[in-house]
Image 1 (tube, rainbow, N blue to C red):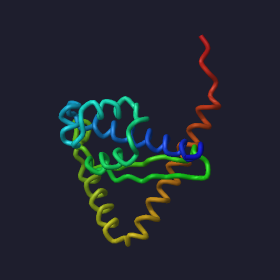
Image 2 (cartoon, rainbow, N blue to C red):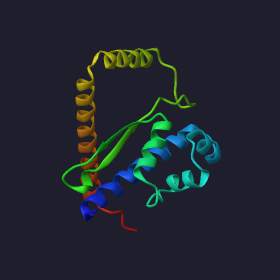
Image 3 (cartoon, rainbow, N blue to C red):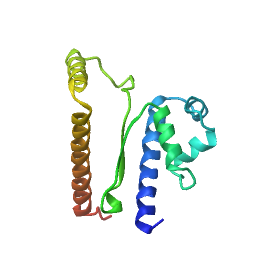
Image 4 (cartoon, rainbow, N blue to C red):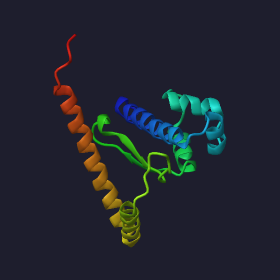
Length: 152
């Protein structure tokens, strides 16, 4: 594999591991219980959570994301720095979520609208969302790079 190819695969592997780790963390289960639910050994899940995924295949990470119910979008580009993984899962009810009739109505309307879209339009919407998220990340990186460091 060429160097640029390896860099893209490495970035995708790392991002996908991060998305899986976030999902596992939101689940509130122990690593053993989460690993059993995902059908993998606990040491493998531990490596994923710690970001040590050099020896974990991208295919296995995709299988784990599918088992977790994550909707995954892989993005590549001309430059390896453009590669990334975006994942969405089912909303997890938690103590921070306050019931809101307006929020529930908005979720229901969004779900209803999503069902009306053709697969092509859904893909277009997801790609546009990905472009916007990428632009936000780039803007954040530029802002973070321009901030004066706090001197002590």
